[in-house]
Length: 156
Image (cartoon, rainbow, N blue to C red):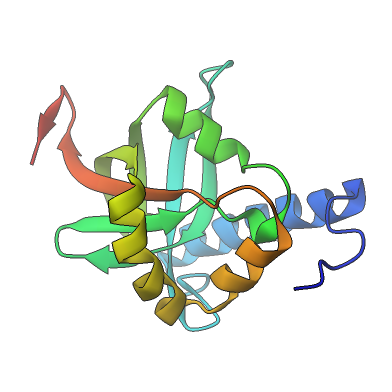
């Protein structure tokens, strides 16, 4: 697939950053009524601790419900680098997730090759652009699994 020209230019990164911030703000102020979906796909707000700063960062992310767990993709629209939130959750796997007006603590992990192979078709059925994004970059788009987690370190 032909990669869009300028995808990794600074202005594209700036636009993606600000679109995410606006989406997060709309989601928060409306309890998910605005910004709770993107192109018909449910959106969660993922809050991670910065890997270097420790400061909380929140990003809107499409998600797939898989039983009690949630599944997300670190696609960054097919750019050649992982989104910052992915590096943050690798360094600090305990995150906060808001869906609609509900928040919960979750623990993240990157899907192994077998899990990714099982989940990828379902993720593409949810949002077909994932295959397009994968075609635009040489990096493998990470699939991340989020499990319910109690503060203090116990799985729910």
